Structures are given as C-alpha cells and as structure tokens.
Image: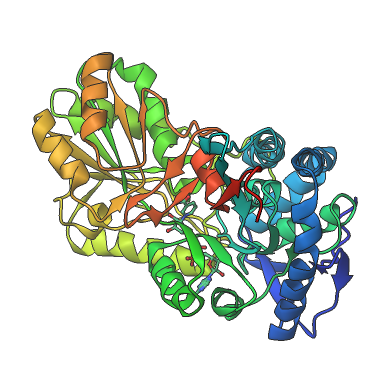
Length: 476
Ligand code: NAD
C-alpha cells in the first residue's frame, strides 16, 4: 500500500465518497497536509446498515474462522508497518520510534486477542435437563477513539468486538483520522464486506453515533467530560457502554530507591508521548528524604531531552497534537505562573511553528492547584513532597479519577500493601505502562465504566444467553 494522499471511508468493504472533507494538520508545523472525508449522517446510516447486514453471517462463522481473520488483519498491518509509522507521525506528532511501537503494538493486539476464547458454563446436567450459559455477541458496535494513540486504541476495540461476532463502525478523532482510514482500506482485503466500517468526520459524527438506533453498543475512549455526554446520549436507546476516560495518575516514590536508576523511569512515566497518555504519571509524590536529589536529577535529565518534529532523527518528544489541547496546556501553565508557583524547568516558551511545549516541572505546588487536581494531558508535571504513607495514600486517592498509579520502592511487600489501598484500575510497582491484551484495564471512579482487555474486556462485547434443554424421554 502506498499512502498517496487519497483517503476514503470504508463502508461495506469498499470506498465511499463524501460530499465534504476535513483538513488534517501536521502538529509539528501547523500546516494542512491532507484532506479526510467528512462523513454525513447518510454516510453513517449506510455504514450502520452495512454492519447490520453483515452481522448474521459474521456471527454464524465458526469462532476459529473469526480468530483467523482478526489475526490476518494484524498480519496485514504488519506488512505495511513502515507506511503506517510515517503517517502516524505526520498526523499525531509522536516520534518515529513511538509510531513504530504503536503500529507494531496494534498488530500484536489484533493477533494476541484473536487467541482468546470464551467458555460455556454448565449450570445443570442431569438425565432430565441440560442448562448452560454461553456468551453471544451484541450486534453492531460503534467505536469512538481519541487522538493520542489513534491506531492502538482502535485495535483495543476492533480485536475483541469482531472476534466474538459483532460487526463495527469505527470513528477516529477528527484530528487523527488517517491511520484508521488506512486500516479500513487494509480490512477491505481481509474481512467480509460490512464487518468493519471506518468513517471519519467532524464534531457531530460522534453524537450521531451514540444516539443511532442501529448501533447496539458504544465503546468509547476519550475525556471524562465527553464520556458523560456519551452516556447521556446512549440512554435514549439503552446502548451497552464501555467508557475508557481520563486519569490523574499518581506515582509514589519511597525513600529507598536508587536515584540515578529511577529518575529516567519517572521522567518517561510522565512525559511519554509528550504526556498525552491517559496512563501517564500526572502527580509525582516524592518522599521528603529524597525530594531534593530526585528533583535535581529530574531537572538535569529533562535538559537532555530532544523535542521536535517526530519525523527527524533523535527527536524524543513531539508536539502537542492539536491547537485546542495546546492552548489548554498553555492556559494551565499560565495559571500556574499567575498563582506564583515555582517553575524548575519550562520557563521559556518554545518558538513556533508547531504546537511545542517544553518539559515543565513545578516545585511542590499546593494540593488544590489546578495543575495537581486537573488532568493536564501535556508536559507539565507537579512534583509533590510527602512525609508518610498514610498521608500519601490519602492524597493519591483524593481525586475523582481512578485510572492508574505507580509505586517505586525496593520494599516489595510495602509497595504491595500501598497498591492494595489505591483506588484505581491498574497499579504498577517499579515499572509503568506495561499493558498486555490478557490483562484487564479498567478505570475506577470517573475514569471509566467497564473494562478493556483481558477476559473481562472480551466479555464486554457479549451478553450471556442461557439455554435450558428438557431432554427426552419427556416429549412435548
Ligand atoms: P475527547 O473526549 O475530546 O474525544 C474523544 C473522541 O470522542 C473523539 O473521536 C471525538 O471526536 C469524539 N467525541 C467528541 N465529542 C463527542 C460526543 N459528544 N459524542 C460522541 N463522541 C464524541 O478526547 P480527546 O481529547 O480526543 O482525548 C484525550 C482524552 O482521552 C484524555 O482525557 C485522556 O485521558 C483520554 N484517554 C483515555 C484513555 C483510557 O484508556 N482511559 C486512553 C486514551 C485517552
């Protein structure tokens, strides 16, 4: 596949035209480099109709055939990994290294999830009766994904939803529609028509999907604010929902760590993908005994990081993905300045073009500062001093979010003990961001509803069906 600049939506296994297009910008220079289809309500209706038509046949296929086809989509993506990597950097901004990682991860996800299976529960098996509960698909799944990991977060949904027999309409973010559209093109060669439809569009397309009577479930990844709107809108047709939302993840650093070893890990915990990661460390709690040396090393490490256009060699951090988010991050930084907070790095704004923000470390702000209480989703990190475990656990839990957390210590049992007290879906000890298709990823509190990945994630795309058979010789 060559990415020749032409992008089309995929409906019923074929390209479909749209009357309008949306501009796609390269965030490293702010310039428009592609036009993406702007799907209308009629395009959405056509996509849903195609998915509904394909559903009975897809559902009826033997499980092993769907396993093979979902896995084949992963293999197809791998064949084109280089082209996807370049396109992803162009539309999203991340470095080639991380684009490669995301594309390979997406292919791996499709292939590994395809190995998962569902089991049947036998409730009763007697000479008179056999009762069992099995899992059946839901119908048409509407998948809505954000702009920070546009293809990986789509793969999180495509693989389990299709595997268990649903069909899908995928909508990428208007900021990063291109890789998803190309994945739709690849799928035309692999999957039966209508099983996987991809449509891009403007701000109205998401709400049209969440209220659409032909869609049975919405699997949404995005901000908590939008998640609330999705829930409200889906209520009209009582759709099933999986919501993977925002986070404000704490990292807790205990005094027994080896400082030079831990500092690069803490840096990347917060700043990977220019901190545009739901599971990024967004509050860094450091024990008071090591606060000063950790801060000193972090400042030094930050100075060694190369920020720039992700397509250039050696660049480690790219730009903020879009102007709206860029302005929000600048506003938070400006607010911190107005509040008189102490900046350890990031005092000088970066010169354009492109939506670049320097690595910004804030020295021990108060717990109620917006930079501590809000999800920044950009490279500004509060460093917070703590005195004892009870205090830091209470501060870590003092948020409406509950996505992830990390604990850094050589004392494994103490760390395990702290993990058990944290109110969030994933806790890492001495590493971070390790996520696999077989491990549940769930947001507690207002970080989400439902689960992605693992067996729990697979079950989210099914409903139980109990079948009770009254056996012969007891004829009707
Ligand atoms: P967003 O909520 O603005 O948009 C996400 C998607 O929803 C986009 O495709 C958008 O077009 C669509 N959308 C917008 N309004 C909609 C509506 N009313 N109805 C239906 N769809 C609508 O989020 P974003 O700014 O693209 O992404 C950043 C956010 O996503 C952050 O809060 C981040 O923490 C979160 N996120 C969460 C996870 C997770 O797994 N929990 C992963 C990545 C990102």
